[in-house]
Image 1 (cartoon, one colour):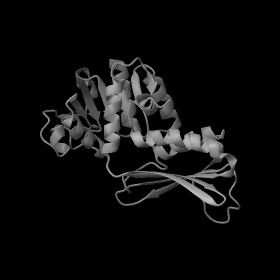
Image 2 (cartoon, rainbow, N blue to C red):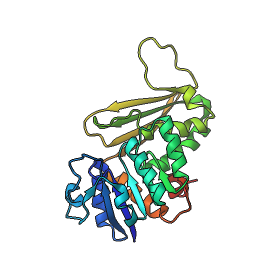
Image 3 (cartoon, helix red, strand yellow):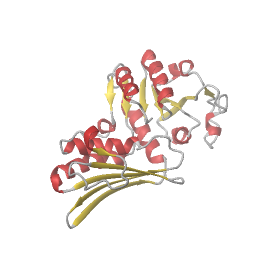
Image 4 (tube, helix red, strand yellow):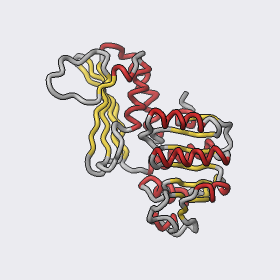
Length: 267
């Protein structure tokens, strides 16, 4: 049995995590956390998630409940995630982080703190997306310089960061595969008379509309043919199930920063 605390428990992902933990025989919800002043604080986490009562009330103080769990799963916002990570490091508890939108300095702090505990950090917990990252790396190496590379991502209108963390991760994987620096070759918008596309460019384009859970397409464009690899998420459960798989895997591991390729043994 792995005891889990869900941070961001009243959010879209947090609610699905709470519901799925309740359904899993080998997992137990040990705590639920939200930010100070959140209207869900004090309410039953199961009821907030739209399922049966869990007996766990949402708190705004992770340190008050962290002793009850082996792992914390956090899908929230960078500031809150870093605060929770500091608490997890202090109490030597494992953590699974699916939050995106970190600045460079925030990422530096995350990596430092995560080195003190077992921590899985991934912008996308989907098994399918992480498998695709391995496959497209090999594709990019084989196709080489004769194929243009574009990444197109689409998410719901409420998503705050752009491009998505997954799209950036995909672009980084592709850039590494073809020995390019994404900071130098990444193109995030095109407008006006921009001239011919540079051969080294990796385009990352963003769509925001409606309630799209998450679509990512990798396009390799050559002369006379186009190859597209697409992943479409139809439910947040794919990310939640991946996070729960990561939590089972990371509990009891040695301290260190891991990602989903470690969890899925794809390295």
